[in-house]
Length: 262
Image (cartoon, rainbow, N blue to C red; front, side, top):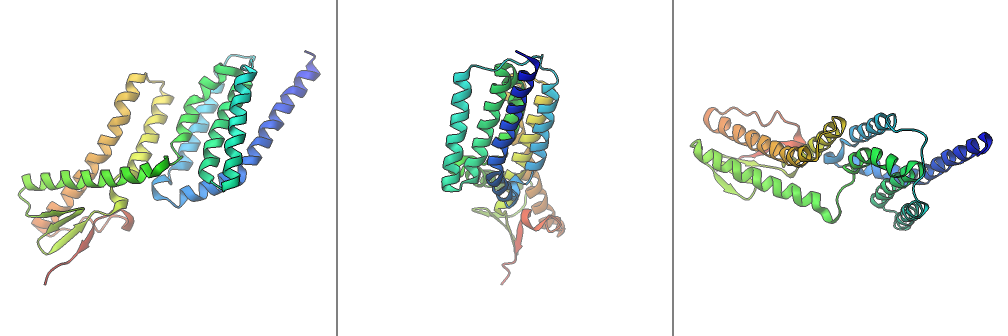
């Protein structure tokens, strides 16, 4: 192929990518605004920055020149991306806009260099996917579950420590005081952040699949145990010494003390 034709093709490819990105801009902007309004997803700028860093570092290692993937797979990914984007625009669903953007990134990677480039970009795509809330309110269910587990385990530890208390749902009742473990303090915020940080480190250090299987569940255990220690220590100090370490936490993530003295 003549040099001029190759340059024109590269230019057309770049402009196509720019146009595709511009088509996502309104929905992605709304998507990011929605994420910022949810405390558990306010880590998304760090996750996206980490995804860009992984993509930048991996692309330098790909051998040149690139060979485009099979046109059938390229057409499938791009039509799927455009189809999901069309539904997102029709329903004005920023969530679907985020999903279609990830599909589009995979399609562009395949278009540029086939499986060689897509494989190199997969860590970036996976890390960026951590910013997309799961469907069907799975994150809310996880919030509720973690809160219940943290309170239940804290209650058992308080029994071992001899702290007189009663457990009522998500409320730990101490003499003359109630500690209500609010939803924002269930640990879901830290779970998402630590999971994204764990993924970034594992991808960056190129750890084995076995490390992923061990470390990712470990982040859940780490955050859950941290919440148990926090709740237990706060209730124990309040009961034995009248020391309130809980009110020093940010209002969105601390047990709310309620007096029930008559």
